[in-house]
Image 1 (cartoon, helix red, strand yellow):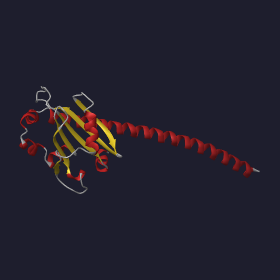
Image 2: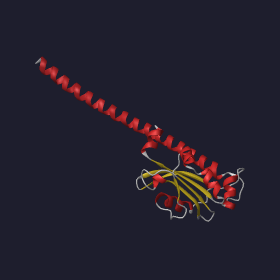
Image 3: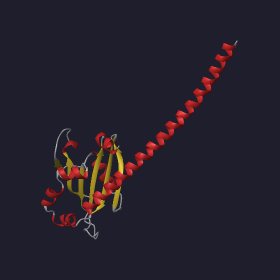
Image 4: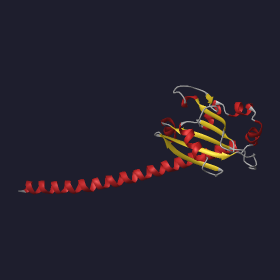
Length: 192
């Protein structure tokens, strides 16, 4: 009899403990998921802020402003090298006229062919993929500075856009500058 009572208490105690522990674990997992989402949002906002700042640093610069008037190829050779792409951690650079037509389109070669290296000028090519999607969005806005992210074919991107002005911030704007960064696994790991 005593052992039957002990078994009953063990079963009741185990059942109560199981439900309490399961509820506690679900609450813990939910809190953890909410905290993880908050951290991701903070990191994403930091990335977008930095992208907007980097884009504006190049767009609101008298050298870029003058380039839009004279189209001196040395400006491109000096300012959009692989080293600068690495320092800015970007994959695409577009410089657009005020009518939206492309003046400069530079891309990391590995975006065109896996394993390729260097920077390619694709200004004579028709924009495709993510570039085309962002460029289409830009034609719909009058914003002078934009930083955002979007998904294209299951891949995440962050981009920044800024009007091209003098270093003092004066215009009129001579076009827009667009920087794009693909968020791949390597970059996700570096954010952690």
